[in-house]
Every structure is written in structure tokens, then in C-alpha cells.
Amino acid sequence: MARRPLPRILSNGGAQLARSRELARTAADSATDVLHPLITIARGLRRLAAAGRRRWTETPKERRGALLFLAASVILVVALVPYGPLLAAITLMAAAAWQGRERSPAASDGPDESQTQRLKSLYEALVPYFSAAEDPEPLYSHGGAWDKAFPTYAFDGGGRISQLVVRYPAYFTDGEAEARARIEHLLAAKSGRGREYHFTWDEEGNQLTVGVLMPLPVDIAAQRFVTTPGETVLGFTDPTRVQRTLPLTQGDRQRDVPPVIWRTGLRSTEPHLLALGQPGSGTSTLLRSIALQALLHGDVVIVDGGGTGEYACLTGRDGVLAVEAGLAGVTASLEWAATETERRLIAANRAHQAGDPPPDDTKRPLWILLDRPTAFTHLAAADGRKDPQSLLQLPLRHGRPANVTVVIADQLDSMDALIEPVRQHTRARVVLGPATAEQLESVLGAPPHTTPIDDFPPGRGYARLGTGPVHRLQVPATPNPYDDATPDALCEAVLSLLPPRTAPADGETIPEQDQPEDVPEPAVPAAEEAEAVPVTPKTPESPEPQPETAPAAMPVLTKET
Image 1 (spheres, rainbow, N blue to C red):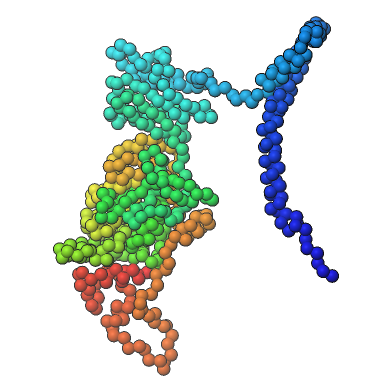
Image 2 (cartoon, one colour):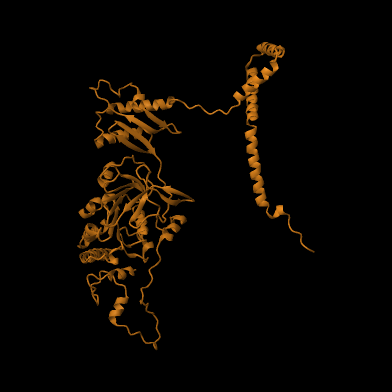
């Protein structure tokens, strides 16, 4: 028995149903547009009927008879007048159309009673700071007019001030940081705590603009950023002072976020970075984020002073020369870094004198990342050894022409333990976590133009590159993927950015542990066996010492585990 084909409505019924639904929606919209006058009149008639019923209900019973007699008299007069019913119908339709129109709430011209009281209290609080006894026409006085001092204001849905322009007299010392700080603290306290405010001082016009900043996004995970070699994304900030945005993925959607980009290399004016913060503020997260971005185009040496294994995921990866957590290994790695910096400088200088371009092994960036180096300072002092920080003087002073970048992260309480070259040559500064205004100014060199919040999420703080402005900063979420408390999505994001494991070098063999007795061992000279085994930079007994300008130290360290 032959099978009959299915009806077409069943074969492609989904498309037809969607098309029918779209046609029905279009027809409904067209009918609504055509019948809009009738709908408006019907709505007005319903409102008129409701008003009449409400008036009849509110009328006392002893007056309802007179009201009925008056209504009947009006109807009789209208019926007897020529064209009366027609004019009555036209009038009724016009009244119904007027009552049935779509009404929008009228915007108030001024603040309400609660908003006025808030502005008055703010004005009275500013009187002691903006008034003087010698002023013949004071702008601020007790019981004065606040509308002259606040020409522009705005409130949010909760009735708190969201934007305010404050006029102040010309004799106010707006050039002093302490005077500004007092006014900013007062405005932040009176406008509502728990929010971040941005203050813009117009010294020429004697005006202060106060604005509420939106919270920075904290759910941006580590990812590949659209940057060029030599650009490192420290985090994200407000679009007020940043003219550039980066496309990235935030959750399940794509958006553009203004970044804080740190430029390194030969033409950088801030070749080294210092990050300070309280424990748990996110300094290790910042170092991991920088390391993942640096491994795209360079090599990395990591010094873990915390000893908690925060950088275990980077051990043995391509481009990671060493991850040291012991005093001996840290000293050896930093000694090699100083020697490598010197070698690069000599090779580049010889190439410049000969009129040749710099060698390729001097162009690849070398990053030295140190997490809490002051911990090794105390250990070295206890063992009678030299401070490992002293080995950073050469990379800090001459690292820029040698493509060597130093990034140091430590705690705010340990800033005094950092040596003078570290504080002098790290012109890019980051402060994460809660900090006082004095600490921010001492580290960044300038106070921020925003008020700090009470609750700082991890990776939240301020950044300043050289002599530029102070930016709010939120570091992208780059946690330790081996931590059990880390969400799976963030772990997968970090693991996807890690480079592959280091492969054996060309010609390198792995000796077998159990060999048969009848199989002779390969005849390899002792010198070649020593060269095939990875060595550390602290081994002084090398069978064949390398020349000063030879780049053989880089591939040897590259294979170090």
C-alpha cells in the first residue's frame, strides 16, 4: 500500500504558523491605528459615566430629586431646540475624546518638600566653609536662599541627590587639597553614603560639580583583550577620562568597556609597575592577569613570596622561565635576570655601534613578576644573606632599553621595606582594597577625585600611570584555577588562557629507568649529557662556559621546570 504524502501544512507548519502570527500582529496594529479615535471616545465615555455615577453616589438623597428634574429639563430643552440633538451629540463626543486622551504625568517644575528640605540642610552645612564676616553680600548665610548656591540639581528614584552644581565665593581656597577634601567629605556625607561621588572643580568659574558614579563591573572574567604588543590591560574604569573602549564578553553578552591600559617597551615612560594593597585585595589576581597577557609575546619569571601556590598553574608552561618560592631559587633567578639585562644591553649596544638592528633575542620582552618580595628580605636578613631586592637595581634602572619589565606587588604595610630603587623607578602605581586618603596620596602621588566606598570587592582600587590622572580600577577576575572555592566558569576562563606545557628541546632524550643488561648504553660524551640536562642559573660548575654575548641562557632557562 503506497504511503500518502503529508499535507504541506504539517511538513512546514512551523514557518506558516510564524508567518500567520506575524500577519495577525500586523493586522492588529493596523486595526488599532485605524480604530484609535473610536477607542479614545469609548474610553472617554467610560470615564464620563464613572464620573456621573460617582457624582450621583456623592449627592445626598434629599437632593437627588432636584438633580433628576434639572437633568430632565436640560434634555427637554435640547430636544426642542433646532439641531439640538446633533449639537448635543457632537458636544458629548468632544468631551469623551478629551477625557479619553492618553495623559502623561506632568513634570514638576521644582523639587518637592523632602527634596527642598535636603537641599536646605546641605546649604546650611556649607555655610561655615563658604562664608566670611567681611563679605558684604554673602552667598552663604544662615537662613539664606539655597537656590542661588545650587543652580543645577537632580535626584534619583530614592530621593537622594544624583547630580549637583555648587557655586562658592571666589575667596574660598579651592587650590588647597585640605580645603577641597573637607568640602568633598561633607558633600558625600550629606548626599548619601554607600555611593561613589566624582568631584569636578572649576576654579575659573568658582563652581563644583558633584556626580554619582555607577559601580564598576566585577563579573568580567579573564579573556583575550584586543590590544597590541606592549599594551597591558590593568583593569576597567569610568568613561569620564578614558577615550578608548575594548570589546569584551561580560557574562552572556558583548559590550564595550573603557580600560586602563599600561604601555611598556622602548618608548614607555612608565616601564615598571608597583601594586600595593591589603591582604585579599586582589594583588595576586592582578599579577596573574598581567602574566597571562605577557606570555603572548614574552617570557616570564615569577617570584612567589606568599608561598601559597597562587602561581602553580603557570609552572612548566611555555614562556614561564621559573616560578620560585624559596630564597635560594629567588636569588638565583634574580641574579640571572640581572645578568640577562646586562647581556641584552651589551648586545644591543654592539649592534648600534655596528649600524645593525638589535639581535632578535634582545627584542623578546622579559617580565619579572614579584609577589611580596619583602618576605624574602626578612629571610635573607635572618640567614645573613643579601637582600634579593638589591638584584633588581639593574633591571629597574636599565630595563626599558633591554625590554625587561618589573612588576612588584606587596602589602601596604610593607611599603617602607621596599628599597629606594623600587620606589623610585616604579612610576606606574596601583592601590587595591581599602586605604586612607593619606596612603592613597603617598602611593599614587595625588589624591583621587572620588570618594572611597565602604565595601571594596576583590580587585577594586585606584591606578595612576606616571603623572596622569587617578583612575578608578577594577581588575578582571583572574583567580587561581586550582582553588576549590573558585567558580567553575572562572576556572575554565583562566585555564583556557594558559599556554601549553613546555615540550622537550630538539635532540633532548629522556633516559629510561629500567634497561635490559644486553642493551648497551648510548655513547654520549659527558659534555653533551650535561648540555642535555636543564640547569639553573645558579650552577657555577658548567662544563663549557657560555660566552658573554651568547643567547644560550634563554633556551636553557626556558626548559626549566
